[in-house]
Image (cartoon, rainbow, N blue to C red; front, side, top):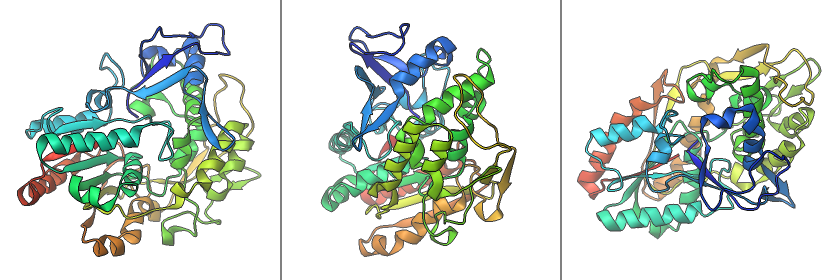
Length: 407
Protein backbone atom coordinates (compact mmCIF):
# COMPACT_ATOMS: atom_id res chain seq x y z
CA UNK A 1 0.00 0.00 0.00
CA UNK A 2 0.90 3.66 -0.33
CA UNK A 3 2.70 5.69 2.30
CA UNK A 4 0.34 6.95 5.02
CA UNK A 5 0.47 9.87 7.46
CA UNK A 6 -1.16 10.20 10.88
CA UNK A 7 -2.31 13.16 12.94
CA UNK A 8 -3.16 12.64 16.61
CA UNK A 9 -5.37 15.07 18.48
CA UNK A 10 -6.16 14.28 22.11
CA UNK A 11 -6.13 10.59 21.36
CA UNK A 12 -7.60 8.41 24.10
CA UNK A 13 -5.01 5.67 23.96
CA UNK A 14 -5.20 2.37 25.84
CA UNK A 15 -1.44 2.37 26.39
CA UNK A 16 0.45 4.77 28.63
CA UNK A 17 3.53 4.92 26.37
CA UNK A 18 1.62 5.78 23.17
CA UNK A 19 1.59 9.44 22.06
CA UNK A 20 -1.68 11.33 22.37
CA UNK A 21 -0.89 14.18 19.99
CA UNK A 22 1.34 15.07 17.05
CA UNK A 23 1.03 18.80 17.85
CA UNK A 24 -0.82 19.53 14.65
CA UNK A 25 1.75 17.80 12.44
CA UNK A 26 1.21 14.92 10.03
CA UNK A 27 3.75 12.19 10.84
CA UNK A 28 4.59 9.13 8.77
CA UNK A 29 2.81 6.04 10.08
CA UNK A 30 3.38 3.73 7.11
CA UNK A 31 6.07 3.19 7.19
CA UNK A 32 9.26 3.76 9.13
CA UNK A 33 11.56 1.36 10.94
CA UNK A 34 10.01 2.21 14.32
CA UNK A 35 6.70 0.84 13.06
CA UNK A 36 8.05 -2.67 13.52
CA UNK A 37 9.67 -2.10 16.92
CA UNK A 38 7.87 -4.13 19.61
CA UNK A 39 7.76 -0.97 21.75
CA UNK A 40 5.97 0.97 19.03
CA UNK A 41 3.94 -1.79 17.42
CA UNK A 42 0.99 -1.60 19.82
CA UNK A 43 0.70 2.16 19.18
CA UNK A 44 0.81 1.58 15.44
CA UNK A 45 -1.85 -1.15 15.57
CA UNK A 46 -4.09 1.03 17.74
CA UNK A 47 -3.77 3.96 15.33
CA UNK A 48 -4.45 1.83 12.27
CA UNK A 49 -7.30 -0.31 13.56
CA UNK A 50 -10.84 -0.03 12.23
CA UNK A 51 -13.96 -1.39 13.88
CA UNK A 52 -17.59 -1.88 12.86
CA UNK A 53 -20.21 -0.18 15.05
CA UNK A 54 -23.89 -0.15 14.10
CA UNK A 55 -22.99 -1.28 10.60
CA UNK A 56 -20.51 1.54 10.00
CA UNK A 57 -16.72 1.71 10.05
CA UNK A 58 -15.21 3.55 13.00
CA UNK A 59 -11.62 4.47 13.80
CA UNK A 60 -9.84 5.16 17.06
CA UNK A 61 -10.98 8.46 18.55
CA UNK A 62 -8.44 11.24 18.05
CA UNK A 63 -6.68 9.56 15.10
CA UNK A 64 -6.72 10.85 11.51
CA UNK A 65 -4.93 9.03 8.69
CA UNK A 66 -4.39 10.11 5.10
CA UNK A 67 -2.21 9.11 2.13
CA UNK A 68 1.00 11.08 1.73
CA UNK A 69 1.29 13.54 -1.15
CA UNK A 70 -1.98 12.98 -3.00
CA UNK A 71 -1.64 14.07 -6.62
CA UNK A 72 2.10 13.42 -6.57
CA UNK A 73 3.96 10.16 -7.13
CA UNK A 74 6.43 10.18 -4.23
CA UNK A 75 3.94 8.70 -1.75
CA UNK A 76 3.34 5.84 -4.17
CA UNK A 77 7.01 5.20 -4.97
CA UNK A 78 8.30 5.11 -1.39
CA UNK A 79 6.65 4.07 1.86
CA UNK A 80 9.03 6.10 4.03
CA UNK A 81 10.58 9.57 3.92
CA UNK A 82 14.13 8.19 3.74
CA UNK A 83 13.26 6.27 0.55
CA UNK A 84 14.55 2.97 1.93
CA UNK A 85 11.26 1.11 1.45
CA UNK A 86 10.25 1.40 -2.18
CA UNK A 87 6.99 0.14 -3.59
CA UNK A 88 5.78 -1.46 -6.80
CA UNK A 89 5.16 1.98 -8.27
CA UNK A 90 8.77 3.14 -8.34
CA UNK A 91 9.48 1.08 -11.46
CA UNK A 92 6.23 2.27 -13.07
CA UNK A 93 6.98 5.95 -12.51
CA UNK A 94 10.59 5.64 -13.64
CA UNK A 95 9.55 3.79 -16.79
CA UNK A 96 7.12 6.49 -17.88
CA UNK A 97 9.59 9.24 -16.96
CA UNK A 98 12.05 7.51 -19.26
CA UNK A 99 9.47 7.80 -22.02
CA UNK A 100 9.11 11.56 -21.59
CA UNK A 101 6.31 11.84 -19.04
CA UNK A 102 6.81 14.45 -16.35
CA UNK A 103 5.70 14.42 -12.74
CA UNK A 104 2.82 16.77 -12.00
CA UNK A 105 2.58 17.66 -15.69
CA UNK A 106 1.18 14.52 -17.28
CA UNK A 107 2.08 11.93 -14.62
CA UNK A 108 0.19 12.00 -11.32
CA UNK A 109 -0.36 9.77 -8.31
CA UNK A 110 -3.65 9.01 -6.59
CA UNK A 111 -2.63 7.15 -3.40
CA UNK A 112 -5.42 6.21 -1.04
CA UNK A 113 -5.85 4.97 2.51
CA UNK A 114 -5.49 1.27 1.71
CA UNK A 115 -7.14 0.18 4.94
CA UNK A 116 -10.42 0.62 3.08
CA UNK A 117 -11.49 -0.83 -0.26
CA UNK A 118 -14.45 0.61 -2.18
CA UNK A 119 -16.68 1.47 0.79
CA UNK A 120 -14.88 4.51 2.14
CA UNK A 121 -15.63 7.19 4.76
CA UNK A 122 -13.04 9.59 3.31
CA UNK A 123 -13.02 11.98 0.35
CA UNK A 124 -10.84 9.88 -1.96
CA UNK A 125 -13.33 9.51 -4.82
CA UNK A 126 -14.09 13.24 -4.82
CA UNK A 127 -10.37 14.01 -4.66
CA UNK A 128 -9.71 11.66 -7.56
CA UNK A 129 -12.45 13.25 -9.64
CA UNK A 130 -10.96 16.69 -9.03
CA UNK A 131 -7.47 15.43 -9.94
CA UNK A 132 -8.79 13.98 -13.20
CA UNK A 133 -10.67 17.19 -14.02
CA UNK A 134 -7.70 19.41 -13.16
CA UNK A 135 -5.39 17.26 -15.28
CA UNK A 136 -7.84 17.29 -18.18
CA UNK A 137 -8.08 21.07 -17.90
CA UNK A 138 -4.34 21.73 -17.62
CA UNK A 139 -3.30 19.40 -20.44
CA UNK A 140 -6.32 19.58 -22.70
CA UNK A 141 -6.19 15.79 -22.89
CA UNK A 142 -8.22 12.93 -21.55
CA UNK A 143 -6.75 10.95 -18.68
CA UNK A 144 -5.74 7.28 -18.50
CA UNK A 145 -6.11 5.50 -15.17
CA UNK A 146 -3.48 2.91 -14.20
CA UNK A 147 -4.22 0.67 -11.22
CA UNK A 148 -2.62 -2.45 -9.74
CA UNK A 149 -3.83 -5.27 -7.43
CA UNK A 150 -6.66 -3.88 -5.24
CA UNK A 151 -6.43 -0.60 -7.16
CA UNK A 152 -8.48 -1.80 -10.16
CA UNK A 153 -11.44 -2.62 -7.89
CA UNK A 154 -11.23 0.85 -6.33
CA UNK A 155 -10.91 2.48 -9.76
CA UNK A 156 -13.82 0.41 -11.07
CA UNK A 157 -16.07 1.69 -8.28
CA UNK A 158 -14.94 5.23 -9.03
CA UNK A 159 -15.85 4.82 -12.70
CA UNK A 160 -19.16 3.14 -11.89
CA UNK A 161 -20.21 6.09 -9.73
CA UNK A 162 -19.40 8.76 -12.37
CA UNK A 163 -21.95 9.69 -15.08
CA UNK A 164 -21.42 8.38 -18.60
CA UNK A 165 -21.01 11.90 -19.96
CA UNK A 166 -18.29 12.70 -17.45
CA UNK A 167 -16.37 9.52 -18.32
CA UNK A 168 -16.68 10.16 -22.05
CA UNK A 169 -15.31 13.66 -21.59
CA UNK A 170 -12.48 12.96 -19.14
CA UNK A 171 -11.28 9.33 -19.34
CA UNK A 172 -9.37 7.88 -22.28
CA UNK A 173 -8.60 4.44 -20.85
CA UNK A 174 -8.47 2.24 -17.77
CA UNK A 175 -5.50 -0.10 -17.30
CA UNK A 176 -6.19 -2.84 -14.73
CA UNK A 177 -2.96 -4.68 -13.88
CA UNK A 178 -3.01 -7.90 -11.81
CA UNK A 179 -6.54 -7.20 -10.53
CA UNK A 180 -8.05 -9.03 -7.56
CA UNK A 181 -11.57 -8.99 -9.00
CA UNK A 182 -12.65 -12.26 -7.34
CA UNK A 183 -10.14 -12.29 -4.50
CA UNK A 184 -7.56 -14.94 -3.69
CA UNK A 185 -6.75 -17.65 -1.18
CA UNK A 186 -3.37 -16.16 -0.19
CA UNK A 187 -5.15 -13.26 1.58
CA UNK A 188 -6.86 -15.77 3.84
CA UNK A 189 -3.52 -17.36 4.66
CA UNK A 190 -2.11 -13.93 5.60
CA UNK A 191 -5.04 -13.42 7.99
CA UNK A 192 -4.24 -16.75 9.65
CA UNK A 193 -0.45 -16.88 9.57
CA UNK A 194 0.60 -13.27 9.14
CA UNK A 195 3.36 -12.28 6.77
CA UNK A 196 7.05 -11.61 7.26
CA UNK A 197 9.10 -8.66 6.03
CA UNK A 198 10.53 -10.42 2.99
CA UNK A 199 7.09 -11.46 1.79
CA UNK A 200 5.73 -7.97 2.37
CA UNK A 201 8.57 -5.82 1.00
CA UNK A 202 11.07 -8.19 -0.62
CA UNK A 203 13.58 -7.27 2.09
CA UNK A 204 14.31 -8.53 5.55
CA UNK A 205 13.75 -6.77 8.89
CA UNK A 206 16.85 -8.01 10.67
CA UNK A 207 16.15 -5.92 13.78
CA UNK A 208 12.83 -7.69 14.50
CA UNK A 209 12.36 -11.45 15.05
CA UNK A 210 10.24 -13.10 12.34
CA UNK A 211 7.52 -14.41 14.74
CA UNK A 212 6.98 -10.84 15.96
CA UNK A 213 6.61 -9.44 12.45
CA UNK A 214 4.19 -12.22 11.49
CA UNK A 215 2.06 -11.57 14.60
CA UNK A 216 2.30 -7.82 14.12
CA UNK A 217 1.36 -7.80 10.44
CA UNK A 218 -1.45 -10.26 11.09
CA UNK A 219 -2.85 -7.81 13.64
CA UNK A 220 -2.70 -5.05 11.03
CA UNK A 221 -4.23 -7.11 8.22
CA UNK A 222 -7.13 -8.51 10.26
CA UNK A 223 -8.17 -5.07 11.52
CA UNK A 224 -8.73 -3.39 8.14
CA UNK A 225 -11.65 -3.92 5.71
CA UNK A 226 -9.53 -4.14 2.55
CA UNK A 227 -8.13 -7.50 3.68
CA UNK A 228 -11.59 -9.04 3.62
CA UNK A 229 -12.41 -7.49 0.26
CA UNK A 230 -9.60 -9.60 -1.23
CA UNK A 231 -10.92 -12.84 0.30
CA UNK A 232 -12.31 -15.34 -2.24
CA UNK A 233 -15.66 -14.27 -3.67
CA UNK A 234 -18.59 -16.50 -2.79
CA UNK A 235 -20.42 -17.99 -5.76
CA UNK A 236 -20.96 -21.27 -7.57
CA UNK A 237 -17.32 -22.04 -8.32
CA UNK A 238 -14.66 -21.72 -10.99
CA UNK A 239 -17.21 -21.74 -13.83
CA UNK A 240 -18.38 -18.26 -12.80
CA UNK A 241 -14.91 -17.19 -11.59
CA UNK A 242 -15.80 -17.45 -7.89
CA UNK A 243 -15.48 -20.06 -5.10
CA UNK A 244 -18.36 -22.45 -4.43
CA UNK A 245 -19.58 -24.16 -1.28
CA UNK A 246 -17.50 -27.26 -2.01
CA UNK A 247 -14.26 -25.39 -2.72
CA UNK A 248 -12.23 -25.95 0.47
CA UNK A 249 -9.58 -23.25 0.85
CA UNK A 250 -8.43 -23.90 4.43
CA UNK A 251 -8.32 -27.30 6.16
CA UNK A 252 -7.66 -28.20 9.80
CA UNK A 253 -8.00 -31.58 11.56
CA UNK A 254 -11.65 -30.99 12.45
CA UNK A 255 -12.87 -28.32 10.00
CA UNK A 256 -12.95 -27.43 6.34
CA UNK A 257 -13.42 -23.76 5.49
CA UNK A 258 -14.84 -22.47 2.20
CA UNK A 259 -15.41 -18.90 1.00
CA UNK A 260 -18.75 -19.11 2.79
CA UNK A 261 -17.07 -19.84 6.15
CA UNK A 262 -14.75 -16.84 6.47
CA UNK A 263 -16.58 -15.16 9.39
CA UNK A 264 -16.49 -18.49 11.26
CA UNK A 265 -12.77 -18.75 10.53
CA UNK A 266 -12.20 -15.32 12.06
CA UNK A 267 -14.21 -16.35 15.12
CA UNK A 268 -12.19 -19.55 15.52
CA UNK A 269 -9.02 -17.46 15.41
CA UNK A 270 -10.40 -15.31 18.22
CA UNK A 271 -10.64 -12.28 15.90
CA UNK A 272 -14.08 -10.98 16.82
CA UNK A 273 -13.54 -7.55 15.27
CA UNK A 274 -12.34 -9.30 12.14
CA UNK A 275 -15.47 -11.43 12.09
CA UNK A 276 -17.71 -8.35 12.13
CA UNK A 277 -15.65 -6.71 9.41
CA UNK A 278 -15.66 -9.86 7.28
CA UNK A 279 -19.44 -10.14 7.57
CA UNK A 280 -19.89 -6.50 6.60
CA UNK A 281 -17.62 -6.74 3.57
CA UNK A 282 -19.03 -10.04 2.31
CA UNK A 283 -22.61 -8.81 2.57
CA UNK A 284 -22.00 -5.42 0.93
CA UNK A 285 -23.32 -4.93 -2.63
CA UNK A 286 -19.92 -3.62 -3.70
CA UNK A 287 -18.32 -7.00 -3.04
CA UNK A 288 -20.60 -8.84 -5.45
CA UNK A 289 -21.55 -6.10 -7.94
CA UNK A 290 -19.26 -6.07 -10.95
CA UNK A 291 -20.43 -3.42 -13.44
CA UNK A 292 -18.61 -2.77 -16.69
CA UNK A 293 -16.40 0.34 -16.38
CA UNK A 294 -17.88 2.11 -19.41
CA UNK A 295 -14.50 3.32 -20.71
CA UNK A 296 -11.90 1.67 -22.93
CA UNK A 297 -10.45 -0.99 -20.64
CA UNK A 298 -7.33 -3.15 -20.79
CA UNK A 299 -6.81 -5.96 -18.29
CA UNK A 300 -3.29 -7.39 -17.87
CA UNK A 301 -2.63 -10.46 -15.73
CA UNK A 302 -0.08 -13.15 -14.99
CA UNK A 303 -0.68 -16.78 -15.82
CA UNK A 304 1.06 -20.11 -15.50
CA UNK A 305 2.66 -19.63 -12.07
CA UNK A 306 1.70 -22.10 -9.32
CA UNK A 307 -0.89 -20.25 -7.24
CA UNK A 308 -2.24 -21.54 -3.90
CA UNK A 309 -5.66 -23.21 -3.95
CA UNK A 310 -5.77 -24.55 -0.38
CA UNK A 311 -3.79 -24.28 2.87
CA UNK A 312 -3.73 -27.16 5.35
CA UNK A 313 -2.90 -26.72 9.06
CA UNK A 314 -1.91 -29.44 11.54
CA UNK A 315 -3.92 -28.00 14.43
CA UNK A 316 -7.33 -26.43 14.86
CA UNK A 317 -7.38 -22.68 15.26
CA UNK A 318 -7.52 -20.83 18.58
CA UNK A 319 -6.95 -17.26 19.86
CA UNK A 320 -3.30 -16.22 20.20
CA UNK A 321 -1.51 -14.56 23.08
CA UNK A 322 0.19 -11.22 22.46
CA UNK A 323 3.40 -11.70 20.40
CA UNK A 324 2.66 -15.42 19.99
CA UNK A 325 3.74 -16.71 16.60
CA UNK A 326 0.70 -17.41 14.38
CA UNK A 327 0.26 -20.93 13.02
CA UNK A 328 1.97 -21.78 9.76
CA UNK A 329 0.42 -23.98 7.09
CA UNK A 330 1.75 -27.54 6.99
CA UNK A 331 1.09 -27.86 3.27
CA UNK A 332 -0.18 -25.89 0.30
CA UNK A 333 -2.20 -27.34 -2.56
CA UNK A 334 -1.77 -25.97 -6.06
CA UNK A 335 -4.37 -26.80 -8.69
CA UNK A 336 -3.37 -26.38 -12.31
CA UNK A 337 -6.68 -24.65 -13.03
CA UNK A 338 -5.72 -21.90 -10.55
CA UNK A 339 -2.27 -21.21 -12.00
CA UNK A 340 -2.08 -17.42 -12.19
CA UNK A 341 0.42 -14.85 -10.90
CA UNK A 342 1.39 -16.65 -7.70
CA UNK A 343 -1.12 -14.66 -5.62
CA UNK A 344 -4.28 -14.39 -7.71
CA UNK A 345 -5.60 -17.43 -9.57
CA UNK A 346 -6.59 -17.18 -13.19
CA UNK A 347 -10.30 -17.13 -12.33
CA UNK A 348 -9.82 -13.76 -10.62
CA UNK A 349 -8.37 -11.94 -13.64
CA UNK A 350 -10.77 -13.57 -16.09
CA UNK A 351 -13.92 -12.52 -14.26
CA UNK A 352 -14.03 -9.35 -16.35
CA UNK A 353 -13.69 -11.31 -19.60
CA UNK A 354 -16.99 -13.04 -18.84
CA UNK A 355 -18.95 -10.26 -17.13
CA UNK A 356 -18.20 -7.20 -19.27
CA UNK A 357 -18.05 -7.89 -23.04
CA UNK A 358 -21.74 -7.34 -23.78
CA UNK A 359 -22.07 -4.05 -21.89
CA UNK A 360 -18.75 -2.68 -23.14
CA UNK A 361 -19.78 -3.48 -26.73
CA UNK A 362 -23.17 -1.81 -26.23
CA UNK A 363 -21.39 1.33 -25.05
CA UNK A 364 -18.92 1.18 -27.93
CA UNK A 365 -15.97 0.75 -25.56
CA UNK A 366 -12.88 -1.41 -25.92
CA UNK A 367 -12.33 -4.43 -23.66
CA UNK A 368 -9.07 -6.31 -24.07
CA UNK A 369 -7.38 -8.93 -21.90
CA UNK A 370 -3.78 -10.04 -22.13
CA UNK A 371 -2.10 -12.73 -20.04
CA UNK A 372 1.65 -12.81 -19.51
CA UNK A 373 3.19 -16.24 -18.90
CA UNK A 374 4.98 -16.51 -15.54
CA UNK A 375 4.36 -12.86 -14.60
CA UNK A 376 4.34 -12.39 -10.82
CA UNK A 377 1.70 -10.35 -9.01
CA UNK A 378 4.24 -7.91 -7.57
CA UNK A 379 6.43 -7.66 -10.68
CA UNK A 380 4.40 -6.59 -13.68
CA UNK A 381 6.87 -4.31 -15.47
CA UNK A 382 6.59 -6.36 -18.65
CA UNK A 383 3.14 -4.84 -19.14
CA UNK A 384 4.53 -1.31 -19.37
CA UNK A 385 5.68 -1.35 -23.05
CA UNK A 386 2.22 -2.60 -24.06
CA UNK A 387 0.56 0.12 -21.99
CA UNK A 388 2.85 2.74 -23.53
CA UNK A 389 1.96 1.53 -27.02
CA UNK A 390 -1.75 1.92 -26.22
CA UNK A 391 -1.18 5.38 -24.77
CA UNK A 392 0.74 6.42 -27.88
CA UNK A 393 -2.08 5.11 -30.05
CA UNK A 394 -4.64 6.97 -27.97
CA UNK A 395 -2.55 10.12 -28.20
CA UNK A 396 -2.43 9.79 -31.96
CA UNK A 397 -6.16 9.18 -32.36
CA UNK A 398 -7.68 11.07 -29.43
CA UNK A 399 -4.89 13.49 -28.43
CA UNK A 400 -4.76 11.74 -25.04
CA UNK A 401 -1.35 11.85 -23.44
CA UNK A 402 -2.20 12.31 -19.77
CA UNK A 403 -1.88 9.38 -17.45
CA UNK A 404 -2.83 9.07 -13.79
CA UNK A 405 -1.56 6.35 -11.50
CA UNK A 406 -3.51 4.81 -8.68
CA UNK A 407 -2.48 2.40 -5.96
